[in-house]
Length: 361
Image (cartoon, rainbow, N blue to C red; front, side):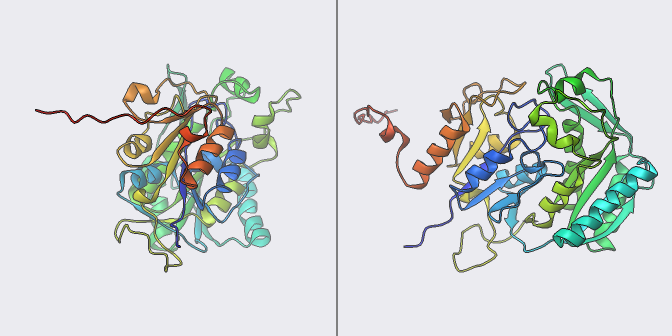
């Protein structure tokens, strides 16, 4: 008997202070575990990016957040690839030494990992990022010159024929920021995350190809009491390696084609109706992707212990969800669902079958 692949989406929204997934790659252990109980795991850079740390698994799809929203709506499908040609955009505002450091990272991934990094381009003006913390406690930001970013991307796509784009933008260092200090000690919100999402969203929305961002920052002073969850970001000069690795195998977006899985195809497209389950923090259910998946037959699993700065629960939106306390419990739900076993059958008591009474006009 042929079973279609069991497909899971794992979402930890960026910039909302998630206690798991709100730091540099600290949701990666969750992704690795989930990938072992499904055939295909679709997740986004915030889950997988760990600065210089990464863990590339063949059944994990690295999908930028805007592209994931379009996938959840059913507008775009995902086409697996063997390898992407990745282009690199560097913000003109990056200092010369920091620029060289990032170019050396790209060369290192070519020489050591065999990635196909084709060309780089400097934006024609500094992008001028500004960071903000909203009253809700979430982070966001603005780009002073978004047109310059899009012009650079267009040149790489039309002239260098790249298939994915990595962006490195100079971010404010904010060494004396209370938000940064809290973040380094395992509290609060990543002050960079909200602005990072805007950068990649612009490129994916405009050009429909995979993209991800790595901020350019000067190394921080040594902090002996650094939180382990924030440690990955302080290993060196760059956040770029994980982005280049992720983009090298990121699926391409497709807007046409059949939505039915064909087991005879090696490089089959994946569409929304093939997603079996989605995992999301319990208080972060207001995003576009979850609202879209709630209109389908996809099982939504919410995790209570992954607290965030938000308070958007499935109940507040009328979304049916399986509520669990931990990701360990979520793994059990996935195993049961994949096996075709009702979760209720695993509890010590099972209620009797109810009689459904048809209502009349």
